[in-house]
Image 1: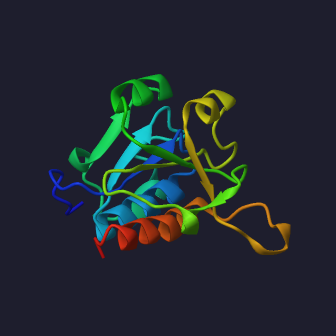
Image 2: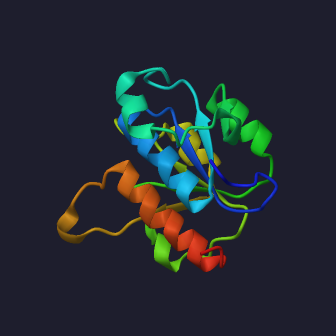
Length: 157
């Protein structure tokens, strides 16, 4: 990633990601748009997975990705930092929310979202409204949409 880690800017956090191609594509998005990526383990794959490597190409810089051993460690180390959970269970749209420069935007596991304990911990919950009662977008699309809005609101793009 080319982001200077001393700059304040949005962070994307992935909760126990389980699809290597999606995580690799999100790494590329964060690298290209200058967002810090945080991964809450365990991952459902290893970083040497060839499906992962095929998509991530040369965008992977482990020094620019923060790994947390568990969600407990993630929330403990975040302290009072603002965490926004993207979830289909939210009532507020991401477009009506006022993002701040140092927000962490948390996305759940592709196959299961986040557990109830995470929902209880996080104060801010947002959704991407969808037409015709569709269930959800691919996580890569969701990260792109919300990160772009966040960057726009805090004048980083």
